[in-house]
Image (cartoon, rainbow, N blue to C red; front, top):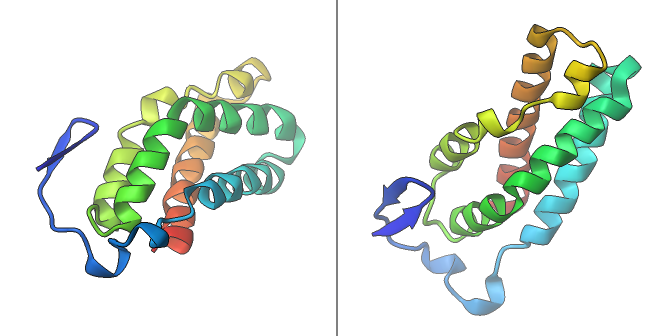
Length: 130
């Protein structure tokens, strides 16, 4: 069994990813997330792009170590996409969206941005790490 966050997960590693030279490119995943945050800020909250980007990057900074660990586990087949998504969504409370709230964005809109951010994290991880 492996301890991942608060969840215990027992699963054999996928054989195609178990070689040390096939490590997932978690850094590419994190770099892609930064681009996704910028895109999300520009498309969803055009008038508050800077605040949205600030909040997205703050969340990424707070969760970076967990995202790296979970991303590696998912790429190695030890964590399913659904388990990864559950762990990411469990971090929802860390995404406080303070800059957006201070900029006057309604709580409902800040929550919608946060949910879209979590969706992008899961989608980017699936695209790059699987």
